[in-house]
Length: 295
Image (tube, rainbow, N blue to C red; front, side, top):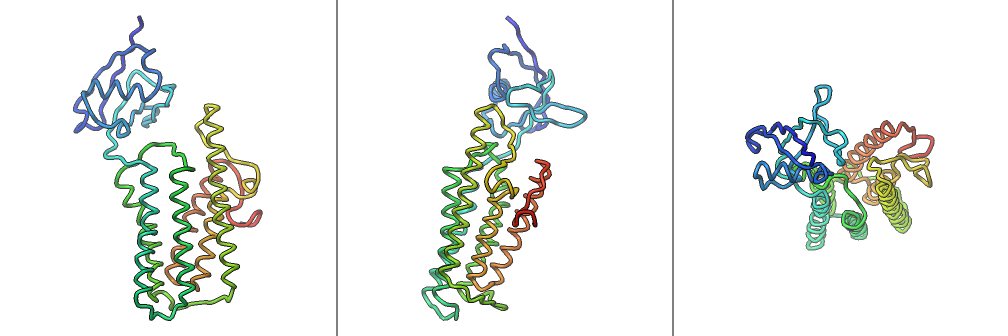
C-alpha cells in the first residue's frame, strides 16, 4: 500500500500554530476538497473549509492548488482567509438595499407630496428600480453560478456601498432633491418604458446565455470561461453590461437627468467599461462595449 507524505507549512500562525506533516493513501485524496478535510482533521480544526486556502510555491509566488491536485508538491502552504460569506448571499444583500431604500423614500414622498416633480415620473422611476433589482434577485437565485463558494465577509459592506448608497440616494429625487439642472427631453413615457423593459429583458437573456455556456464548459471539464462568438456576443464584449448601461440611461432620462441618477449612471458605466476592457484583454478580442464597431 502506497502512503504519500506532505509537509504543511502555516501562513496563519494564529489559527494553524505550527507546521505539520500528514500521511494518506493517494486513492483517498483525489480532489482539493479531500485534501482540505484531511489537513483540518490533522490540525484538529473545526474551521469551515471555505476559509482555507492551500497553495504551492512557484518562482517565489504562492499559486493556488488545482481542484484535481494537478500541481501539488511535497510542500504546501495553508492560510486562513478569515470569516467568509456566500457569494450568492452577498448578491442578494446588495440588491435588497435599493429595494428597501427606494420603497421607504417613495412612501415618504407619497405622504406629503409638495415637491413639484410629477407623480407619474416619481412612480415610473420607483417601479423601474424595483423591477431591475427584483430581476437581479431572481438572477442571483436561479441564473448565476459562482466559481467560488464564498468571499471575505468584509466585502459585503464594500460591495453594498454602490447599491445601498450610490443608487439609494437617487430616491432623494422623490423628495425633490437633485433637480438643480433638470432636463426634460419630452419623450413619451410609454416609449421610455418600452425601451427600459426591452433592455432589461435582453440583459436577462444575456445572463441566461452565459450560464448555459458556462454549464456546457463544465460538463466538458473546462472551468475557464471562454468568449462567446454568437448572436449579440459576436459584436459586444459583454452585452449584459451594454444593456445594463442602456437601462440606466433610460432611468436617467425618465428622471429628467436628476443629479443623483446621472452620478450613478456615470459611476456604473465607467466600472462596467473597465470590466469590459479586462475581458477584451483576457480573451484577446477587440469587441465593442456599447456600439458595435464604434465603441
